[in-house]
Image (cartoon, rainbow, N blue to C red; front, side, top):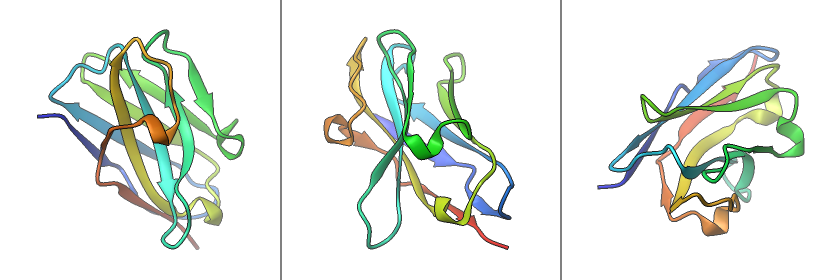
Length: 125
């Protein structure tokens, strides 16, 4: 059974860091695109970052560039999102998702078929 489980969220002060994890079950994440998305209740979900299955290329939304880093540990079947210099506006529920396509390169949320339940990140003093 395909399952994605996020963890690592929590309360952090502005300027702090968190590392989110997305553990994949039921499939090997080596060559599958996995993306991170976030949503503030009442607002639309937005993309954060993506690591492509085809070639490992990474994409970042503008607000995530220079602060967030996506990486993958194929041995552990986990995708990480290291978040530094966090701001109050980063407060959201963070989700990981995949389209489960081997060697794919699509990072849009509209292509993702499998989603985790999310982990809450709160940035506040």
